[in-house]
Amino acid sequence: MEYNLKRKKSIKSLSMLNSEQTHNFNQHLKCTKARLCIRYRASLTIEAAFVLPLFVFCLALFLGLFRVLGAEVHVEKAVSCAAERLAVSGVFEESSANHMLDGAVGNRWIRQILKQEGCPEEYFKNGYQGIFLDLLQSDEKFVRYRARYQINLPMGAFFKQTVSVVQTVSSRKWNGWVEDAKSGEEWVYITETGKVYHKTASCRYLDLSIQAVSVKQISKLRNKDGSKYSRCSCTEYAGGEMVYITDYGTEYHGGLNCRKLKRTVYRVQKSETGNKGACSKCYGNK
Image 1 (cartoon, one colour):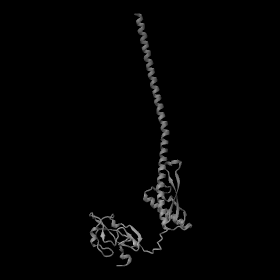
Image 2 (tube, rainbow, N blue to C red):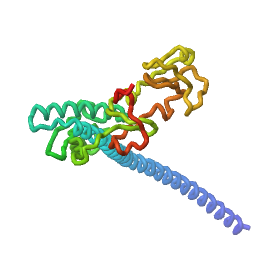
Image 3 (cartoon, rainbow, N blue to C red):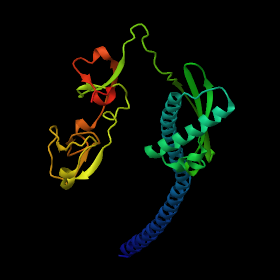
Image 4 (spheres, rainbow, N blue to C red):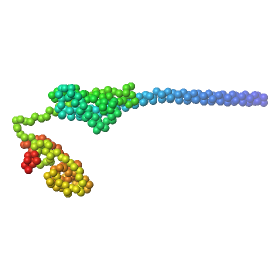
């Protein structure tokens, strides 16, 4: 009996000891988890502090590169168009005055083209006014231009606020044409659908002056030859309020897409005109 009581007391004391140890272990485990959680959160904060600036920097690099490439494409197209126009103008004497004139005219054309193309002006330092065109070389056949400008970089990409760009463009001069002196044949002007040939490209039949008028007034209107206007045979009139006429035409048109309102003029020799007759206005056969 006494042995059983001692055994029960020892079991009870062991149970109390185990319970206390278990409680201490649980408390230690909770503290350990709390410390690990704090360390994990601190680790995430440190990683975010490093990763976020790196992400912003990479984004700035990407945007800066995209802006530089886009601006270069727009400027190259504008400079090419301006160089072609200047090459056709034919003013390329080797003098500083003409160089300045070509640069001023070219700069104006470049700004107009960039505006038409929708290139943002804020891409460039000082806007479109910060683009400068210089004549580098001019000989009998070619002209060479250089465009200088600076591009604004977003968020200081590449550790710079701007990047300097220099682009060069070459264009062949247009020196006119040389007529065949051996044949001595007359050159005339024709259109795709015209039935006559013209002595000069400035003939009023070739130079269309399109006007939009009310369809209600068409019966009262006359062309410059005094002829009435009839409905165009190549397009269907859709019943709109406005129609289109020309100064010397004899028909009114329902839309500007009518092929008779377009002129593609070709310069050919008179022997190539086929069965076409001579224009009464050009040759005075009226």
